[in-house]
Length: 224
Image 1 (tube, rainbow, N blue to C red):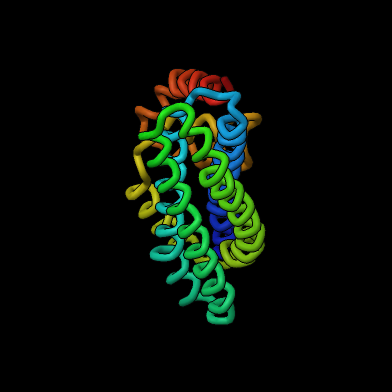
Image 2 (image 1 turned 90 degrees about the horizontal axis):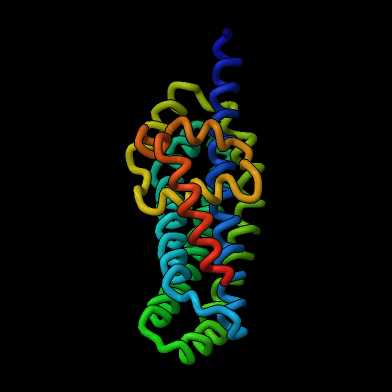
């Protein structure tokens, strides 16, 4: 295969993997906001799984942002100087979103300690507004980011892409594999899901059916 075609194929593959990660994040923010809506209205009593979801979501998104800011963006800035302004803007958006996630995490810490009646008030006045802001800000950010990366990744040398993928996989968070696999699969497999799952540790791939059952059980709790 000619080098340019090889670079393009590897770039499109990691772009699909990135879309899978973005789908997990998009779906996670929707699930969180929906569950908090139920709690805020007094129709849900499942606080513990909701707090766990919020904490996992914050850790997952923060890690993804660090990976982009510390690994992806320096390589892309070096290779594509004309795109530096766009990448800097994406980093600024990361800071805004991280601030919103921190506010949501603080509200979830309150929920973890609150009585049932107090939790409803916390959800209504603080947690739900933060979760809705996270959902909307994240969606707008990803909508802006994805076209930039679709342009740049296929032009990136495949050797650099392989190096980046190895670094990302090595530093990937190990928490919440049931949420990762569940959100990747629910309500339908995300674009890039197969490519992303190929990078999972063997135990996670082996335990996939069990982890998906755990995800469905947790989701039922969030909807109860």
